[in-house]
Image 1 (cartoon, rainbow, N blue to C red):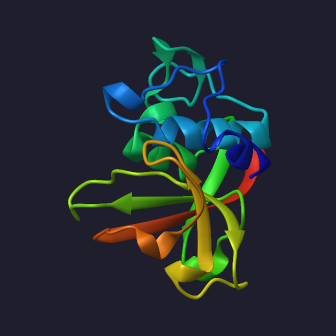
Image 2: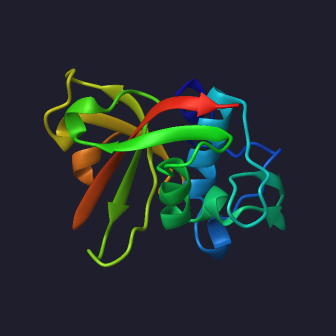
Image 3: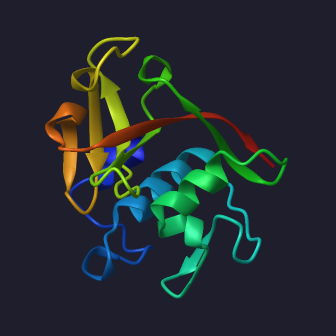
Length: 156
């Protein structure tokens, strides 16, 4: 969460900025999760890692791939999340939005809750790239579907 706040309006030079080639939101979410976990999974194609702009796992920058990796059932290395109701999210968790209702498009990071447990999107403040933001109320997005990823641990 501290990482997300630090880099919400900037770009960490250690990571490529994908803003102009499809968006940087999940790259930013991955950086934030990595800052908290300190562990990557270097399994080619199916892991979650970043080496450079051209050598990264699809899960590092792809919204749906990120979700599949983080919620995987098997005991592979890396951070692990659960798809939970809004009432179970905490700062440092990730929200995913579908703007069309057909595909998942955006991965902001939860930086604060105005009420705990959160009962509605207005209770959740996020940081994000692609639509750079910090302390943005989640209810200010226009979306068709939403899901909440709560991190439960890191497998080493």
